[in-house]
Image (cartoon, rainbow, N blue to C red):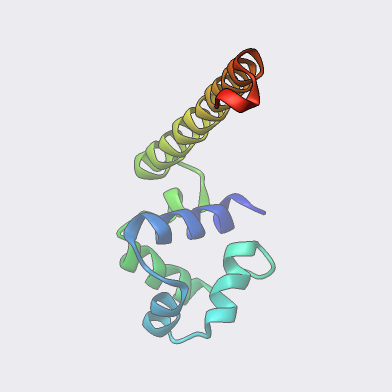
Length: 111
């Protein structure tokens, strides 16, 4: 995917819009919005300007020539959540292994 398509998807999510809502606002089909966000096609210039207004973002930020603070913060928070999920999974595995060890020591009849 391109920076534009990534930014289109991320800013839509950040702003809390569904694909269907954006489609209605810009007069396109939800499939077209999905194609923009997957990088298969790009919006025309007029629609691109509408999207900038809807999302309250500059064209330079949407294109990716300038970092958008909101998008960068969103990506960072997503990364932190994924790291926490991985940490918790590892912790859960360790706890599960301890439980299995204790059950083996006690014997299944005592548990």
